[in-house]
Length: 139
Image 1: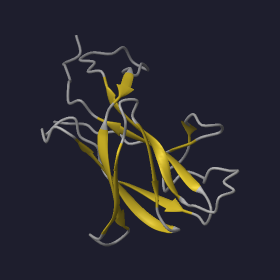
Image 2 (image 1 turned 60 degrees about the vertical axis):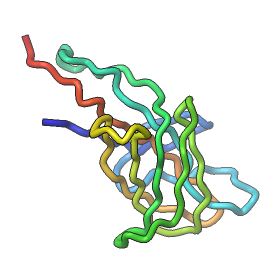
Image 3 (image 1 turned 90 degrees about the vertical axis):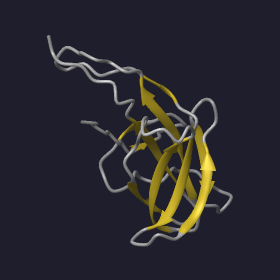
Image 4 (image 1 turned 180 degrees about the horizontal axis):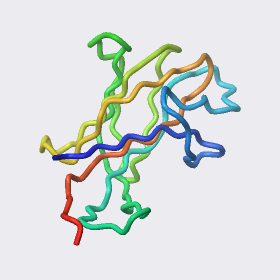
């Protein structure tokens, strides 16, 4: 069984911080009038057994991020994250689904689609977490 975790997060100043589902608040201070999504793609490092309350460390993952109009299959944009996992894609204001895809074509790592709302003149900050699929039985 593969468990997948996706976290949306809002950036206070370029980094990522926690937020709730449904799209992170848009980034402040965008004066060029563009809107879109920016963020980072990461993958867990494969932690077979973790003590309760612990999280598996993550590392940046170069990946493809496909932006699809909410409620449709229409591809609006596509971008690749860099070696540091960072990406940015300009799209008009609206509701979108982001689909993270690994670049190898293998079944893992995998990310579930997430929904975002892009506001006029703002970039919505996201963190797309890929699951490595490495699991182990508790000891």
